[in-house]
Amino acid sequence: VQLQASGGGLAQAGGSLRLSCAASGRDFNSAVMGWFRQAPGKEREFVGAINWSGSITFYADSVKGRFTISRDNAKNTVYLQMNSLKPEDTAVYYCAVYQSAVLSGNSYQDPSRYAYWGQGTQVTVSS
Image 1 (tube, rainbow, N blue to C red):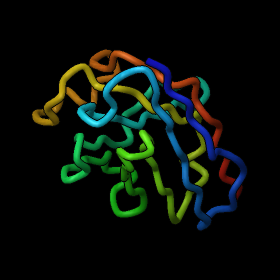
Image 2: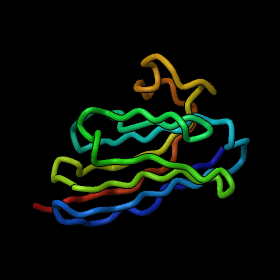
Image 3: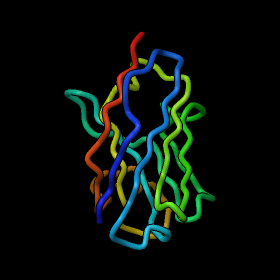
Image 4: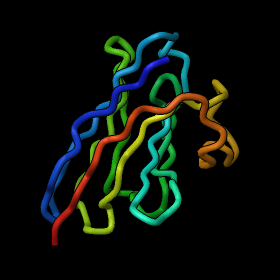
């Protein structure tokens, strides 16, 4: 499984960015996908997750109402639309494949429950 994240960059506070994560090497259409981020000196934290069809999404409280996860199974790609960006959103963002095909409970917030990871893309938000 290979995941390629892209779309990061520099944005001003209040601005927007859209990250993409292209998957190859497995049946993407049945995979639960997650987004995480890691700021310097901090642990990797959950941002959001989406089920195989896109009908179920979960978000961290810190991004709820500002970030939106979506997916295009025909393109084997999952997206993270980030609006109303804040300087505290600055981090390396990672996409990952969840170990289970079912998105339920709270384990999807645990990075150790994800089997495959992309290389990360840097997002920097200036004030």
